[in-house]
View (cartoon, rainbow, N blue to C red):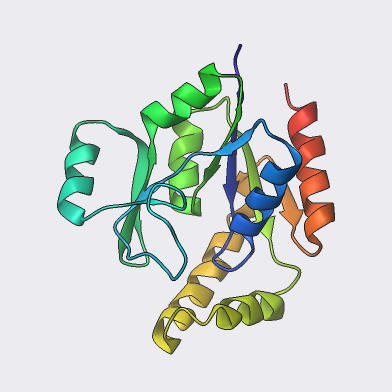
Amino acid sequence: MSGKLVILSGPSGVGKDTVIDGWQARNRNVVRVVAYTTRAPRPGEVNGVDYHFTDRSEFLGKAQTGDFLEYKEVHGNFYATPLTDMIKLLEQGKIAVLKIDVQGAISAMEKRPDALSIMLLPPSAEELERRIRQRGTEDLATIDKRLRNALEEIAQAHRYHHQVINEDLTTTISIIEVIVSEAK
Protein backbone atom coordinates (compact mmCIF):
# COMPACT_ATOMS: atom_id res chain seq x y z
CA MET A 1 0.00 0.00 0.00
CA SER A 2 1.28 3.46 -0.82
CA GLY A 3 0.59 6.47 1.33
CA LYS A 4 0.31 10.14 0.51
CA LEU A 5 3.04 12.72 0.90
CA VAL A 6 1.84 16.12 2.12
CA ILE A 7 4.07 19.17 2.36
CA LEU A 8 2.69 21.71 4.83
CA SER A 9 4.36 25.10 4.96
CA GLY A 10 3.59 28.50 6.33
CA PRO A 11 5.29 31.37 8.04
CA SER A 12 6.51 31.16 11.60
CA GLY A 13 3.57 31.52 14.00
CA VAL A 14 0.86 30.50 11.53
CA GLY A 15 -0.02 27.40 13.58
CA LYS A 16 1.52 24.52 11.64
CA ASP A 17 2.16 22.37 14.72
CA THR A 18 -1.31 23.03 16.13
CA VAL A 19 -2.93 22.09 12.83
CA ILE A 20 -0.86 18.91 12.47
CA ASP A 21 -1.55 17.89 16.09
CA GLY A 22 -5.29 18.44 15.60
CA TRP A 23 -5.28 16.58 12.29
CA GLN A 24 -3.44 13.62 13.86
CA ALA A 25 -6.01 13.53 16.67
CA ARG A 26 -8.78 13.20 14.05
CA ASN A 27 -7.00 10.78 11.71
CA ARG A 28 -4.68 8.02 12.93
CA ASN A 29 -3.15 7.65 9.44
CA VAL A 30 -1.67 11.15 9.62
CA VAL A 31 1.95 11.07 10.78
CA ARG A 32 4.34 14.00 10.89
CA VAL A 33 7.79 13.17 9.65
CA VAL A 34 10.05 14.37 12.48
CA ALA A 35 12.59 16.76 11.01
CA TYR A 36 16.19 17.31 12.07
CA THR A 37 17.36 20.70 13.31
CA THR A 38 20.42 22.35 14.77
CA ARG A 39 18.39 24.87 16.76
CA ALA A 40 17.99 24.51 20.51
CA PRO A 41 14.76 23.00 21.80
CA ARG A 42 12.06 25.41 22.94
CA PRO A 43 10.51 24.84 26.36
CA GLY A 44 8.44 21.66 26.30
CA GLU A 45 9.88 20.30 23.05
CA VAL A 46 11.03 16.68 23.15
CA ASN A 47 13.91 15.24 21.14
CA GLY A 48 12.62 12.69 18.63
CA VAL A 49 9.03 13.91 18.98
CA ASP A 50 9.09 17.58 17.99
CA TYR A 51 12.43 17.45 16.17
CA HIS A 52 15.59 15.41 16.13
CA PHE A 53 17.83 17.99 17.80
CA THR A 54 21.44 17.66 16.72
CA ASP A 55 24.62 19.69 16.44
CA ARG A 56 25.92 21.21 13.21
CA SER A 57 28.69 18.64 12.77
CA GLU A 58 26.36 15.62 12.96
CA PHE A 59 23.78 17.38 10.80
CA LEU A 60 26.25 18.22 8.05
CA GLY A 61 27.58 14.66 8.14
CA LYS A 62 24.08 13.30 7.56
CA ALA A 63 23.57 15.80 4.75
CA GLN A 64 26.78 14.68 3.04
CA THR A 65 25.77 11.00 3.18
CA GLY A 66 22.37 11.67 1.59
CA ASP A 67 20.23 11.00 4.65
CA PHE A 68 17.93 13.96 3.91
CA LEU A 69 15.30 14.58 1.24
CA GLU A 70 16.11 18.25 1.59
CA TYR A 71 17.87 20.56 3.99
CA LYS A 72 18.18 24.29 4.33
CA GLU A 73 19.48 26.93 6.67
CA VAL A 74 16.67 29.10 8.04
CA HIS A 75 16.85 31.75 10.77
CA GLY A 76 20.50 30.77 11.34
CA ASN A 77 19.77 27.07 11.96
CA PHE A 78 19.67 24.00 9.74
CA TYR A 79 16.49 21.97 9.17
CA ALA A 80 16.09 18.74 7.20
CA THR A 81 13.62 16.03 6.24
CA PRO A 82 14.91 12.50 6.95
CA LEU A 83 14.49 10.48 3.77
CA THR A 84 14.30 6.98 5.31
CA ASP A 85 11.63 7.93 7.87
CA MET A 86 9.47 9.49 5.15
CA ILE A 87 9.74 6.46 2.85
CA LYS A 88 8.86 4.03 5.67
CA LEU A 89 5.66 5.95 6.44
CA LEU A 90 4.63 6.02 2.78
CA GLU A 91 5.28 2.26 2.48
CA GLN A 92 2.98 1.76 5.50
CA GLY A 93 0.18 3.61 3.68
CA LYS A 94 0.31 6.63 5.99
CA ILE A 95 -0.27 10.27 5.20
CA ALA A 96 3.30 11.47 5.74
CA VAL A 97 3.27 15.16 6.60
CA LEU A 98 6.39 17.22 6.04
CA LYS A 99 6.30 20.44 8.02
CA ILE A 100 8.81 22.41 5.99
CA ASP A 101 9.70 26.05 5.49
CA VAL A 102 9.21 27.51 2.01
CA GLN A 103 12.83 27.05 0.93
CA GLY A 104 12.83 23.38 1.85
CA ALA A 105 9.34 22.83 0.46
CA ILE A 106 10.31 24.08 -2.97
CA SER A 107 13.30 21.75 -2.98
CA ALA A 108 11.14 18.82 -1.78
CA MET A 109 8.49 19.55 -4.43
CA GLU A 110 11.16 19.38 -7.14
CA LYS A 111 12.42 16.02 -5.83
CA ARG A 112 8.96 14.61 -5.07
CA PRO A 113 6.47 15.86 -7.67
CA ASP A 114 3.97 13.34 -6.23
CA ALA A 115 3.75 15.43 -3.04
CA LEU A 116 0.63 17.46 -2.34
CA SER A 117 1.69 20.93 -1.21
CA ILE A 118 -0.35 23.14 1.11
CA MET A 119 0.57 26.65 2.25
CA LEU A 120 -0.98 27.57 5.58
CA LEU A 121 -1.67 31.30 5.75
CA PRO A 122 -2.60 33.63 8.62
CA PRO A 123 -5.92 35.50 8.57
CA SER A 124 -3.91 38.76 8.56
CA ALA A 125 -0.41 40.13 9.07
CA GLU A 126 -1.54 41.61 12.40
CA GLU A 127 -2.77 38.24 13.65
CA LEU A 128 0.47 36.58 12.61
CA GLU A 129 2.49 39.17 14.53
CA ARG A 130 0.26 38.66 17.59
CA ARG A 131 0.80 34.88 17.47
CA ILE A 132 4.58 35.19 17.16
CA ARG A 133 4.82 37.69 20.02
CA GLN A 134 2.44 35.62 22.18
CA ARG A 135 4.83 32.65 22.08
CA GLY A 136 7.26 34.51 24.31
CA THR A 137 10.13 32.29 23.14
CA GLU A 138 12.19 34.75 21.09
CA ASP A 139 13.86 38.11 21.61
CA LEU A 140 12.72 41.21 19.70
CA ALA A 141 15.40 40.89 17.01
CA THR A 142 14.35 37.30 16.29
CA ILE A 143 10.67 38.29 16.21
CA ASP A 144 11.42 41.07 13.71
CA LYS A 145 13.43 38.66 11.56
CA ARG A 146 10.60 36.09 11.61
CA LEU A 147 8.05 38.75 10.62
CA ARG A 148 10.20 39.93 7.68
CA ASN A 149 10.73 36.34 6.56
CA ALA A 150 6.99 35.64 6.91
CA LEU A 151 6.14 38.25 4.30
CA GLU A 152 8.66 36.72 1.88
CA GLU A 153 7.27 33.24 2.52
CA ILE A 154 3.65 34.31 2.03
CA ALA A 155 4.66 35.80 -1.33
CA GLN A 156 5.55 32.24 -2.43
CA ALA A 157 2.07 30.82 -1.74
CA HIS A 158 1.33 30.61 -5.46
CA ARG A 159 3.95 27.85 -5.77
CA TYR A 160 1.79 25.48 -3.70
CA HIS A 161 -1.11 23.34 -4.93
CA HIS A 162 -3.37 24.78 -2.22
CA GLN A 163 -3.49 27.74 0.16
CA VAL A 164 -5.51 27.46 3.38
CA ILE A 165 -6.14 30.34 5.77
CA ASN A 166 -5.76 29.19 9.37
CA GLU A 167 -8.37 31.26 11.14
CA ASP A 168 -10.34 28.53 12.89
CA LEU A 169 -8.56 25.26 13.76
CA THR A 170 -11.50 22.91 13.18
CA THR A 171 -12.31 24.48 9.82
CA THR A 172 -8.66 24.48 8.75
CA ILE A 173 -8.27 20.77 9.53
CA SER A 174 -11.52 19.94 7.74
CA ILE A 175 -10.38 21.81 4.63
CA ILE A 176 -7.03 20.02 4.64
CA GLU A 177 -8.73 16.63 5.07
CA VAL A 178 -10.93 17.31 2.03
CA ILE A 179 -7.92 18.44 -0.04
CA VAL A 180 -5.97 15.29 0.85
CA SER A 181 -8.90 12.90 0.39
CA GLU A 182 -9.60 14.32 -3.09
CA ALA A 183 -5.95 14.17 -4.15
CA LYS A 184 -5.07 11.37 -6.55
